[in-house]
Length: 361
Picture 1 (tube, rainbow, N blue to C red):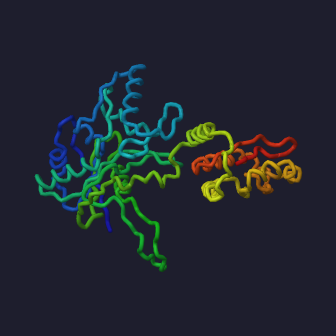
Picture 2: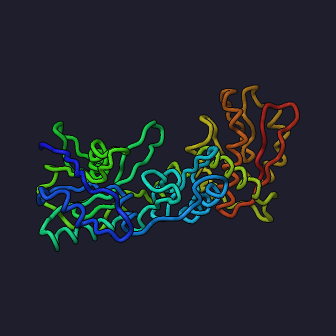
Picture 3: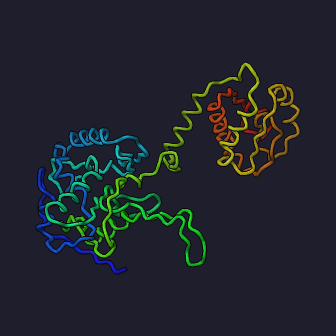
């Protein structure tokens, strides 16, 4: 495969109501079937009228920007000073919901397109129907990446090709079957286009030539790139996750239930937290009577490095470094128990021990 990345200069300023298909076809009469157009979302938003008037400066501008950001936000992920990472109504997680103040008049803000996939489909259809061009279209925008400095363009919308190249089920040259490999090819093409577009060169469209043999309509669009919430392991920033956990733990009902806890429900709660607690910690369920009757005697026999008494079980000796996390582990378990409908009480550590707390059912 040999790829070419070609700029489309000469499009100029884009205003609300402008015909993007006409602007692109006029600036790039050399387009061919099978080309992939990487179109900056900003000109799509401008043409679609996704602009908001704001004061040019001062506290009024900041207040209005905050109001606009709140309207574009489905969920706050993390906040650090003036930086806000949020999930948009599209499902994208990005800084400031993609609201942009660059390459636009100082009294206006540019919002993301309402439906980037629909915008890509409309542009593709216009180029096909009016100019007899069969091309794929990617609507791109700039994002940061967790754990990595720097920005790159990614796809917000796509038409004319699948967003993901799925290698699962294929066999590599060494005979290994691939089980997880799914390549976000439209993100890679968006990043390639950004290499020649840039932020200050006023080249909002790039063409990647040589990747596609033929276009293909795909109803899924770029929304297939949005990870399902049930699979999101990093849905909150560190500080936000800690605050949410403390709040949830603080609102748990305090007190053991009127009837003995169902051992099956307790086992499910233990299984739910077993993978995230301090290494070496073991949760074992015994009856309420055994907890209360055996607490003092058991504590007296604890080794110096024991972390505590969990659910009335015999303590599990682990390293002292794990003692710091033990209280949080108990709160995790309390939350899991509450989800199973099991009431519990977090007791203070017995005097003269190294335990951080005791959980009674």
